[in-house]
Image (cartoon, rainbow, N blue to C red; front, side, top):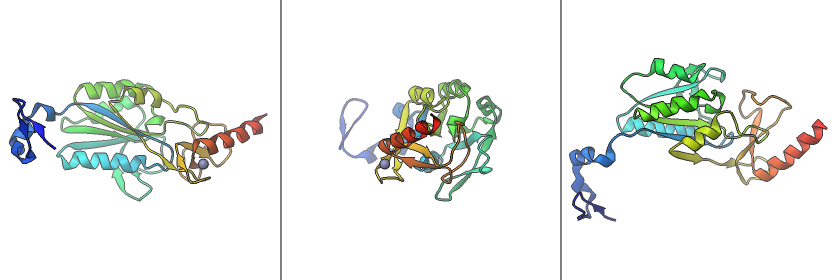
Amino acid sequence: MFFRGSKGEIIKDFKMFGPRVYKSSPFMEQKGFSLVITGPMGSGKTTELFRQLERIEIAGGTVMLIKPVRDDRDTGVRTHGGFEREAIALNSPEEIFDYLEPEITTIGIEEAQFFDDSICGVVRVLVAHGKRVILSGLDLDAMGRPFGPMPFLLTQAEYVMKLQAVCMSCGADASRTKRKVESKEQVMVGGMEIYEPVCTACHESWLRGEREGEL
Ligand SMILES: [Zn+2]
Protein backbone atom coordinates (compact mmCIF):
# COMPACT_ATOMS: atom_id res chain seq x y z
CA MET A 1 0.00 0.00 0.00
CA PHE A 2 1.32 3.48 -0.83
CA PHE A 3 0.13 7.08 -1.05
CA ARG A 4 0.99 9.83 -3.52
CA GLY A 5 2.47 13.03 -2.16
CA SER A 6 1.69 16.56 -3.39
CA LYS A 7 4.29 16.28 -6.21
CA GLY A 8 3.03 12.86 -7.25
CA GLU A 9 5.86 11.04 -5.48
CA ILE A 10 5.14 7.68 -3.94
CA ILE A 11 5.05 7.67 -0.14
CA LYS A 12 5.22 4.19 1.28
CA ASP A 13 5.17 5.06 4.95
CA PHE A 14 1.92 6.58 6.15
CA LYS A 15 3.68 8.07 9.21
CA MET A 16 5.55 10.45 6.88
CA PHE A 17 2.42 12.60 6.73
CA GLY A 18 2.71 13.41 10.44
CA PRO A 19 -0.22 14.80 12.39
CA ARG A 20 0.30 18.46 11.38
CA VAL A 21 0.65 17.84 7.65
CA TYR A 22 -2.21 15.37 7.78
CA LYS A 23 -4.49 17.97 9.35
CA SER A 24 -3.73 20.65 6.79
CA SER A 25 -4.28 18.33 3.85
CA PRO A 26 -7.12 19.63 1.65
CA PHE A 27 -8.51 16.11 1.52
CA MET A 28 -9.14 16.19 5.25
CA GLU A 29 -11.10 19.45 5.22
CA GLN A 30 -14.44 19.16 6.98
CA LYS A 31 -17.10 18.90 4.32
CA GLY A 32 -20.79 18.49 4.92
CA PHE A 33 -22.56 15.30 3.94
CA SER A 34 -25.61 13.30 4.80
CA LEU A 35 -25.54 9.60 5.55
CA VAL A 36 -28.82 7.67 5.72
CA ILE A 37 -28.86 4.42 7.68
CA THR A 38 -31.93 2.42 6.74
CA GLY A 39 -33.40 -1.07 6.92
CA PRO A 40 -36.23 -2.89 8.71
CA MET A 41 -36.99 -3.09 12.43
CA GLY A 42 -34.29 -4.92 14.32
CA SER A 43 -31.55 -4.35 11.74
CA GLY A 44 -29.37 -2.29 14.09
CA LYS A 45 -30.00 1.17 12.64
CA THR A 46 -29.79 2.93 16.00
CA THR A 47 -26.70 0.93 16.99
CA GLU A 48 -25.04 2.01 13.73
CA LEU A 49 -26.14 5.63 14.23
CA PHE A 50 -24.58 5.60 17.71
CA ARG A 51 -21.39 4.05 16.32
CA GLN A 52 -21.14 6.78 13.68
CA LEU A 53 -21.75 9.53 16.26
CA GLU A 54 -19.11 8.00 18.53
CA ARG A 55 -16.56 8.09 15.71
CA ILE A 56 -17.26 11.79 15.20
CA GLU A 57 -16.81 12.44 18.93
CA ILE A 58 -13.52 10.50 19.02
CA ALA A 59 -12.33 12.73 16.17
CA GLY A 60 -13.15 15.80 18.28
CA GLY A 61 -16.51 16.72 16.77
CA THR A 62 -19.57 17.82 18.73
CA VAL A 63 -22.78 15.94 18.20
CA MET A 64 -26.46 16.73 18.65
CA LEU A 65 -29.14 14.04 18.45
CA ILE A 66 -32.74 14.78 17.54
CA LYS A 67 -35.86 12.69 17.14
CA PRO A 68 -39.53 13.33 16.34
CA VAL A 69 -41.84 14.08 19.27
CA ARG A 70 -44.25 11.32 18.26
CA ASP A 71 -41.79 8.64 19.21
CA ASP A 72 -42.86 8.64 22.86
CA ARG A 73 -41.20 5.39 23.84
CA ASP A 74 -38.39 7.19 25.68
CA THR A 75 -37.01 10.61 26.52
CA GLY A 76 -33.68 9.58 25.06
CA VAL A 77 -32.83 7.21 22.24
CA ARG A 78 -32.00 3.66 23.19
CA THR A 79 -30.69 0.74 21.17
CA HIS A 80 -32.07 -2.75 21.59
CA GLY A 81 -28.74 -3.55 23.22
CA GLY A 82 -29.58 -1.02 25.95
CA PHE A 83 -27.24 1.87 25.07
CA GLU A 84 -28.80 5.28 25.51
CA ARG A 85 -28.13 8.83 24.33
CA GLU A 86 -29.78 12.13 25.12
CA ALA A 87 -32.01 13.34 22.31
CA ILE A 88 -33.94 16.55 21.66
CA ALA A 89 -37.54 15.77 20.64
CA LEU A 90 -38.76 18.12 17.89
CA ASN A 91 -42.18 18.63 16.31
CA SER A 92 -40.75 20.06 13.11
CA PRO A 93 -37.31 19.61 11.51
CA GLU A 94 -36.87 23.43 11.21
CA GLU A 95 -36.58 23.56 15.02
CA ILE A 96 -33.07 22.08 14.60
CA PHE A 97 -31.86 25.63 13.88
CA ASP A 98 -33.08 26.80 17.32
CA TYR A 99 -30.69 24.34 18.97
CA LEU A 100 -27.79 24.51 16.52
CA GLU A 101 -24.77 25.88 18.40
CA PRO A 102 -21.75 26.87 16.26
CA GLU A 103 -19.56 24.12 17.77
CA ILE A 104 -21.95 21.37 16.65
CA THR A 105 -20.36 19.59 13.69
CA THR A 106 -22.77 16.68 13.40
CA ILE A 107 -26.51 16.24 13.67
CA GLY A 108 -27.88 12.75 14.31
CA ILE A 109 -31.53 12.21 13.38
CA GLU A 110 -33.39 9.19 14.71
CA GLU A 111 -36.68 7.80 13.31
CA ALA A 112 -36.41 10.16 10.32
CA GLN A 113 -39.42 8.50 8.64
CA PHE A 114 -41.76 10.24 11.12
CA PHE A 115 -40.70 13.79 10.14
CA ASP A 116 -42.53 15.62 7.35
CA ASP A 117 -41.01 16.40 3.93
CA SER A 118 -39.48 19.67 5.16
CA ILE A 119 -36.68 17.55 6.67
CA CYS A 120 -35.22 17.12 3.16
CA GLY A 121 -34.62 20.87 2.75
CA VAL A 122 -33.32 21.19 6.31
CA VAL A 123 -30.75 18.43 5.67
CA ARG A 124 -29.62 20.11 2.43
CA VAL A 125 -29.13 23.46 4.18
CA LEU A 126 -27.14 21.82 6.99
CA VAL A 127 -24.94 19.92 4.52
CA ALA A 128 -24.36 23.06 2.44
CA HIS A 129 -23.11 24.75 5.64
CA GLY A 130 -20.56 22.01 6.23
CA LYS A 131 -22.52 19.97 8.78
CA ARG A 132 -22.56 16.19 8.86
CA VAL A 133 -26.07 14.81 9.09
CA ILE A 134 -26.47 11.16 10.00
CA LEU A 135 -30.04 9.90 9.80
CA SER A 136 -31.61 6.59 10.66
CA GLY A 137 -35.09 5.54 9.61
CA LEU A 138 -37.35 2.82 8.24
CA ASP A 139 -37.41 2.85 4.45
CA LEU A 140 -40.66 0.85 4.20
CA ASP A 141 -43.78 0.69 6.32
CA ALA A 142 -45.36 -2.62 7.35
CA MET A 143 -47.30 -2.78 4.07
CA GLY A 144 -44.08 -2.43 2.08
CA ARG A 145 -44.75 1.17 1.00
CA PRO A 146 -42.05 3.90 1.05
CA PHE A 147 -42.17 5.59 4.44
CA GLY A 148 -42.65 9.39 4.72
CA PRO A 149 -39.67 11.46 3.49
CA MET A 150 -37.32 8.45 3.34
CA PRO A 151 -37.26 8.02 -0.48
CA PHE A 152 -36.15 11.65 -0.88
CA LEU A 153 -33.66 11.51 1.99
CA LEU A 154 -32.10 8.37 0.50
CA THR A 155 -31.72 9.78 -3.00
CA GLN A 156 -30.26 13.12 -1.90
CA ALA A 157 -27.83 11.51 0.55
CA GLU A 158 -24.09 11.38 -0.18
CA TYR A 159 -23.91 8.02 1.61
CA VAL A 160 -26.46 5.27 2.21
CA MET A 161 -26.24 2.22 4.46
CA LYS A 162 -28.96 -0.39 4.07
CA LEU A 163 -28.88 -2.90 6.91
CA GLN A 164 -30.48 -6.33 7.02
CA ALA A 165 -32.18 -7.94 9.99
CA VAL A 166 -32.94 -11.65 10.38
CA CYS A 167 -36.29 -12.98 9.09
CA MET A 168 -38.33 -14.11 12.09
CA SER A 169 -40.17 -16.61 9.87
CA CYS A 170 -37.36 -18.38 7.99
CA GLY A 171 -33.99 -17.03 9.21
CA ALA A 172 -32.96 -15.43 5.88
CA ASP A 173 -31.75 -11.81 5.59
CA ALA A 174 -34.69 -9.52 6.29
CA SER A 175 -35.23 -6.20 4.53
CA ARG A 176 -38.89 -5.70 5.41
CA THR A 177 -40.99 -5.19 8.51
CA LYS A 178 -44.21 -7.08 9.26
CA ARG A 179 -46.86 -5.96 11.72
CA LYS A 180 -47.87 -8.64 14.17
CA VAL A 181 -51.14 -6.98 15.28
CA GLU A 182 -54.07 -5.79 13.12
CA SER A 183 -54.13 -2.12 12.13
CA LYS A 184 -55.07 0.00 9.11
CA GLU A 185 -52.83 2.89 10.15
CA GLN A 186 -49.41 3.48 8.59
CA VAL A 187 -47.99 4.74 11.84
CA MET A 188 -48.22 2.66 14.97
CA VAL A 189 -45.50 3.61 17.40
CA GLY A 190 -44.04 0.52 18.93
CA GLY A 191 -41.16 -1.85 19.06
CA MET A 192 -40.60 -5.52 18.55
CA GLU A 193 -43.85 -6.34 20.39
CA ILE A 194 -45.79 -4.98 17.40
CA TYR A 195 -43.37 -5.39 14.51
CA GLU A 196 -40.90 -8.02 13.37
CA PRO A 197 -38.37 -8.21 10.53
CA VAL A 198 -39.07 -10.60 7.66
CA CYS A 199 -37.50 -11.39 4.27
CA THR A 200 -39.20 -10.26 1.06
CA ALA A 201 -40.72 -13.70 0.32
CA CYS A 202 -42.18 -14.11 3.81
CA HIS A 203 -43.42 -10.49 3.72
CA GLU A 204 -45.17 -11.02 0.37
CA SER A 205 -46.97 -14.13 1.60
CA TRP A 206 -48.04 -12.26 4.76
CA LEU A 207 -49.27 -9.33 2.59
CA ARG A 208 -51.37 -11.70 0.44
CA GLY A 209 -53.03 -12.94 3.63
CA GLU A 210 -53.63 -9.33 4.77
CA ARG A 211 -55.22 -8.38 1.44
CA GLU A 212 -57.44 -11.44 1.43
CA GLY A 213 -58.59 -10.41 4.88
CA GLU A 214 -59.62 -7.00 3.45
CA LEU A 215 -61.83 -8.52 0.70
ZN1 LIG B 1 -38.35 -15.31 5.47
